[in-house]
Image (tube, rainbow, N blue to C red; front, top):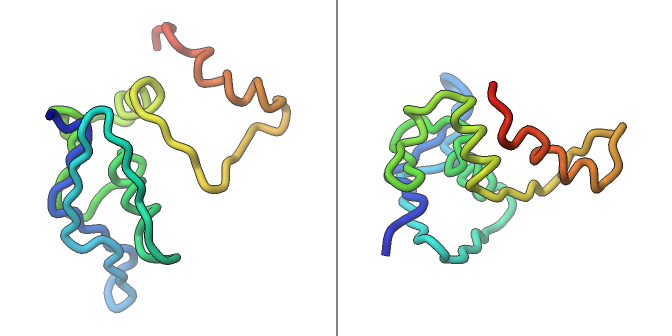
Length: 118
């Protein structure tokens, strides 16, 4: 089965100098197309950080993440945003909506740019 997401030797360090915290330490993840995966653990264990690096919303300190055959770190931000918008799903723990739009309009907003050239 082909992997849709592969993360190898993922390390994520926050902070600098003596104030560093290693949140991900050589994590390996393989998610096959069509597979459902739950990421579970106690508060502060790195679940959100893992999801952010797997989606390309945050950079990793070392290792690599591939979406299909494409290494995310080699993509420009607008290409990453297109992939997240059209090929990934991500539900935030604390969603932020535009206050001037109702719930339905907030949901439909990403689709309004679909098919438009930049």
